[in-house]
Image 1: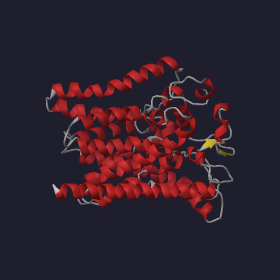
Image 2: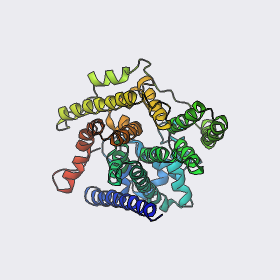
Image 3: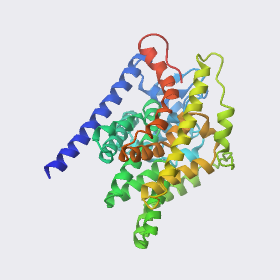
Length: 386
């Protein structure tokens, strides 16, 4: 019993350390680069402006920018039921964004609807997601210290920089991998929460129910499939209150990846080291494809494992469901497919190999270039750019 308690304490220590480390970085960059305005973390663009309802927040605006996804979840957190058109009309794709209600909705609920508390609670939930991800990764890794690698996943790095919800989904993916070893009501809650965080959480449920079907555990599969009910009910509500939006898709396997590799998104002439950014984009694409290949290769003898099945689900989505915009930047595909990097990395550590850290490392240069401008700003060399 003492050894179990000691292991839990060690994992909690690493989780707390990572959370404090991330908070310290956020506090420093907000204080130095953004004049102490924490709303800068939402990466709101000045091109579209902000809703009049939130004018009192004095939201930090990035000049000449359309902003990033975090600004959408910020608006949703202040209006989760779409009661104020002044807010919802600023959400670029409401039917898609509002489905991902868990983090924004929890921020609203935990703040009891008090507008001045919603943002601090939202920041806290992102930090909690980091801590939970590190805890579960530490539990899965051969040595608990490896749990800190969770902080270096693209989903984590992007989320702490731009308040996206992907760190929560990736944390639930780590929790899924841990709790399938001892299935209980906790696994059910994790699956239900993952789907409400992002639609890709359905792939975790598919992996687990697929495993149960392969084991001919029909009752278990039927029981756990109910984890999708809360999300499906919420999706129905969103569908009834939002307009449809069509997203163009490339149905050629890896077609969008190939196109973005040979024809990468251009950068304005004012961007310094644009050639390095383009090179880093290509390295990140290669890294993700390498992670896909490793996942498929290692699945040959363990394909009846629920984590492997979930991983293959993400890989299949990445290969066959080609949304061109996803593959333009590691800030997009890196966070969407971070569960693959997580699962492949854990498999690599279990095998005593370092090979899977290669694909992960290839995601860092492009993210480093982006975060590097904030580091330079801290040292007074230049201001941050998004």
